Amino acid sequence: MDGAKLNGKPVTQETLEEKGYKRYHGEGIDIYYSKDICAHIGNCVRGNPEIFEVGRRPWIIADNGTAENAAYVVDTCPSGALKYIRKGE
Ligand code: SF4
Image 1 (cartoon, rainbow, N blue to C red):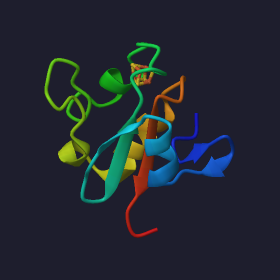
Image 2 (spheres, protein in one colour):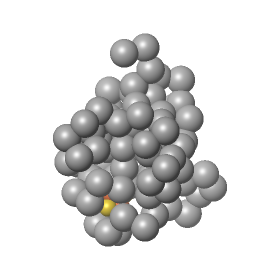
Image 3 (spheres, rainbow, N blue to C red):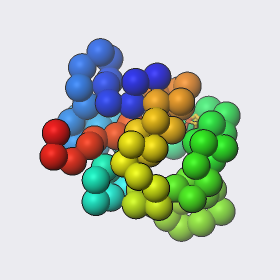
Image 4 (cartoon, rainbow, N blue to C red):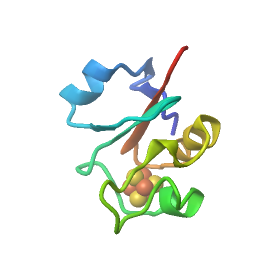
């Protein structure tokens, strides 16, 4: 699922927060997560266990990988529970 879009439109911080997504700040990318939407399929933790680590607080550390890789892994989330906003775009 396209992590940069929601219902076919580019995501914004405002819409994501309105919909209950929590922001995980990074230098080059912010990652957003909705626990209500998450289907616990695990593509995120398999995709990059440095960024996504379920037993850790915070469980998402956006800067533990490149922004490119974080966006790639977020796009593999099948439920739409993960979204991202790249910085400087
Ligand atoms: S890939 Fe998406 S649906 Fe699967 S565990 Fe991660 S956040 Fe949840």
